[in-house]
Amino acid sequence: MRRLFPVTDRTAPAAAPAPQARPEGRSEAPVNLVDREWTLDELAEAYAYPAPLTTPGAPATSDAPRRWLRANMVSTLDGAAQHDGRSQAISSDADMRIFGTLRGLADVVIAGAETVRLEGYRPARARDAFAARRAADGQAPAPAIAVVSASLNLDFSLPLFTSPLVPTLVLTGAAASPDRVRDAEKAGARVIVAGDGPGVEPDRAVTALADLGLVRQLTEGGPRLLGQFAAAGVLDELCLTVAPLLTVGSAQRITGGPVLPDPERFALAAVLEEAGFLFTRYRRI
Image (cartoon, rainbow, N blue to C red; front, side):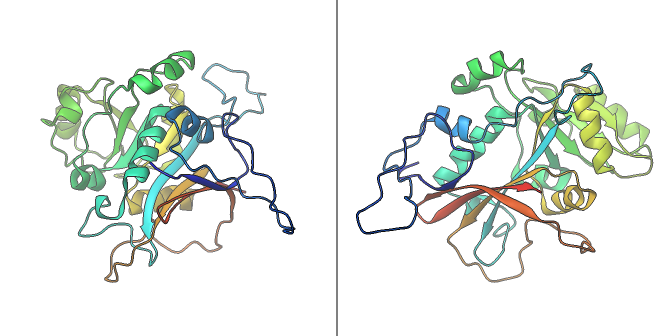
């Protein structure tokens, strides 16, 4: 990641350089330009989860959030969340660096079954760059992957289920096929029922994960799952990469599903820029 510029940053890392002095004769606020690659420590500070978060067993009177769900998505200028069915074509090296940072901070990565299939999900790996930070926060060496699936139409022979560093979780509804539940558990996955019917209820899903101590939550979509989280009002933060690309066509947006009766307002928390890509963070008001 070269020439990563904090353009607007209301939660700037302490390690980031101070803003440059205002050029003489200009009245607007200075822009903090960093003509170098940000370190992973700086990125980790910039994208740190709110602290403190309430952990299981904490007093019910605590004012700290019970958990924090952020989403990480990428979109083109014309709103496409993918090209030819995958997001990689509209990503960049800097986007993948932030992708890795967000995973390095999370307790759990939540993804829909279709995204897991299309993107070829594998187990999250432990990274030396985040080892000390994760240990200090009492986290596992790598985040767990939580797959949301009503049908459990998943290939349980894949490494995601058979050989993860941290056991993979499967979120499903009470009406899921008992045979498929047994297949998942036989492969080593932990099945969590988070809905009374065939599907998963977003609020129950994030609560069930928080009950396991997985309070730093990250979802990578896809659009239908993110739409469900947004519609249920459980999405706290959106990390959106805006790619300087046009794809035309009819690709999905970053969210899918019924229209909200009233648009939900998010506040801009930070913007970074590299090679025309904008890395934004928005928090729910």
